[in-house]
Image (cartoon, rainbow, N blue to C red; front, side, top):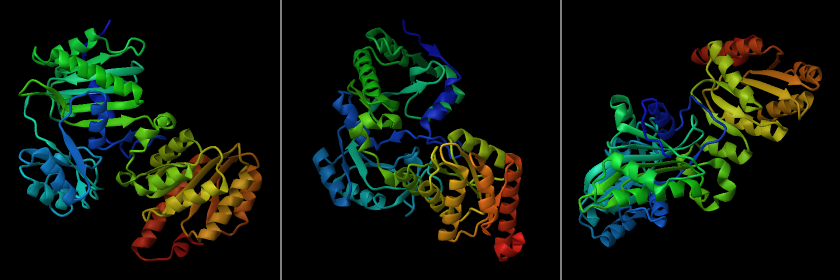
Length: 442
C-alpha cells in the first residue's frame, strides 16, 4: 500500500537535498550534479517529456541552435551548477542567467554575454561560477506548474517522492509558509511506484483529468531513472501541464551517488570540474577528502570521525578551521605532502593542526615524513602535531629534535588551544607586519 502524507518536517529534508552542500557541513563524498541540458537529454531517453532544446558553447552555435528551433519564442539558460540562476548576475553586469529570447540574433547576443563569464547567485558566493555553455530550448506555456522530487529519505531509509501543487517557485518557501502543500510518499523499493501510487500522486498534485495518466507515466519513468542511474536526487521544478495538455519537465536538477561511479561510467563522464572548487578537484586526484572552509587553522587528519572531532575542538577553543581534510588510514608521506600543498595554498591559513592516529602507519614514519615535507616546502606557518599510536614516543622525539616550527603535543585539548593561540598571534603579526618568528618568540 502507498502512503500519501502532508508533512511539515519535510522542509528540513528539502533543504538538505536541494541546496548545494554547505561549506560548514563537510562530508567525505559529494553527489555528482550534472548540467540541465544533460539532465534533459537523460530524461528524454527514458520517455519523459521535456521541451525541445540544444546546448551551445559559442555565440555562433547559439545563433545556429535558435535557427533550428524556429527562432521566435525561446529561452536561453546559462549552464551553471547553482540554484537561483534566473535571479543571478554575471560579472559583466548582465542580470539573469535565464532569459526569454525571440530571435537567433538575441540568442547570439545573450550567449556572448553569458559564455566565458561568472554567474553570481545565492548559492555561488561572491566569486560566482563560470558559464561555459548555454541551453536554448523552446518556450512552452504552462496552464499549471507543479513540483516533483525523488530523494533518499533517512527516516524511512528509502526513496521518497516529494510533490507539491505549487511549482515554479522556491520549494523551501512553500514548505515553510504552506507546509500542507507538500505531499510526501515513501516508496518501498521492493514494490516500486505502482500505477496506483503514481496515479494518486498525480491526482493529489492537481493535474487535470486529461493529464493524470500522462503525469502518472512521467512519475513512474522518473522513478526508473532514479533507480537505474543510482540517483540521490531528481528534482523537477516545474513539472508543467502545458496549454495543450502535455506534461513536461521544464527544469531538471539531478544528483548521483559518488559511490556508484564504478557502474555509472557514462553518467560520471558528464562531470564538469570547472563548476567545482579547484582545490577539491585536486584533492580528489590525490585520493584525499578535502573541503575548503572559511577559517584560518589548517587541519590535517586521518579518519573522517577524527577530522570532525578536530574541527569541533578548534571551534570550542575559539578558533575556526580552514578546511576539512582526511588523508585516509594510510597517512603516507606522499599523502601528507599533497595535503600540505592544499593547506598552504590558502593564504588565510595562520596555523596548521596535524592530528594523526598511527595505526596502519607508525607515528615515527609519519613524523619523519612531516619533517621532510616542512623542510622541502620551507613551510613557515607554525604547526601543532599530535601523533598518537604506534611509536608515538619516537615520533615526538624526532619532531622536538628537528629544530623546525613543529610543536609536538599529546593532549588533544592542549593541542587545540595551542593551534588557536598560534593562529591569533600570526594574524596579529601579519597585521602589524612583524616576522612570524619574532611574534612567536622563536
